[in-house]
Image (cartoon, rainbow, N blue to C red; front, top):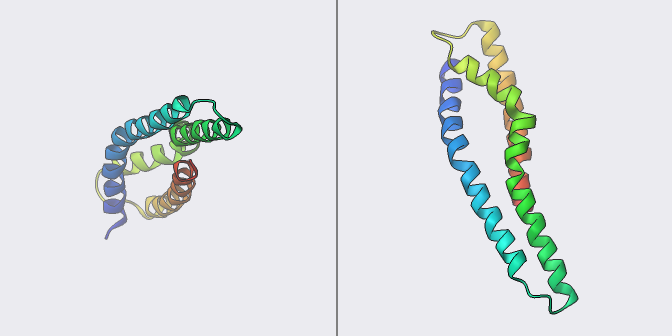
Length: 117
């Protein structure tokens, strides 16, 4: 598959994910916060569970600031390449390969946040 096509496909997936994933993260975090709130302080373990549910909520919703702070430069560069007309130049092909490799690593790290939560 030509690199220009790969970058354009990445852009379509990115556009779908940026509108779909934040509400999913917010809903999941809200569920964890409800669980933390609903625990009645009956024993010392109740506080521990409430703290764990709160931490899970924070970790789950932290994908949004992580994406903005850590992934934005890579995402913006990939979007710029995806919007270019015609075939990518040799320099752009090398740049797209580097950017996609960096994005895979950053996305892997980001996916660990809700997993740990």
